[in-house]
Image (cartoon, rainbow, N blue to C red; front, side):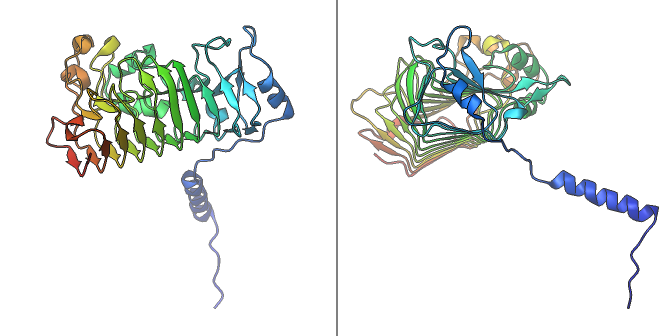
Length: 358
């Protein structure tokens, strides 16, 4: 039997809807082209005060002998999918270089023409020696930034912060040599970052890794943390949720390993999200001396900071309550070599603490 194909306006409208639906469900495309020889030459040129940085929006491969002193900026949607493979080369923003005090790599969202944000996604950085720091930011550099504070004064702040921040960044097999600055800082709203196979050494005035407010769904696995801090823990989970921290090694974290808390009202910003549903498992904490701060501390602040009531009065977030609310987290199968169970501190029965051994 011959079957007639439908025709006419109804068929055309139906076909148009199917095409439109197909377009809507296509996976997000994030690809970058290979960089030109001109970009590579510019990257290798020494940084000066007049020419201190370079934008990267393409795939670039360095050599092991390369020492790059220019600050690398990865900005906006145009940089999505960019891959930087250092092949063992060094990105040098250390003391004495023109970019000391700035992020060695800055992955950032930028304002777009419509009053929103142009967001870089699926950026990949691998096989680099980082003398300095990597910073990833959306609405602002930290929880006290102007746009972050303004957004926090109204509901749905967490959604806005996450929609405006870089997402799905991969950091693979990096060697961080900190020189004062926090070597890896995830600004408010950063989601889906993966950090793996990397090593943190040097000194930090703060932590080794900072997960700022409203960030979520990040994974830190198979890394070694050996940063010397003045007084802070190695990893701060500040109002950050649904992160996975697993299979890492912490070398003598005398000032603390992983702390979960919420910076209640600092700088007048309301913190909305709580540090919940994080999984901390299978990590090794190696101690060489006694008197260490906790390896893992859930609710490490809980309203005791002086700035807890600086934020404006609103019926939500840290304005409603200054408590940390570090709940529904799992801390399992961690080893405390040279320590004991007292190095895991928990004050909420909704957290799961199991199978952690000396």
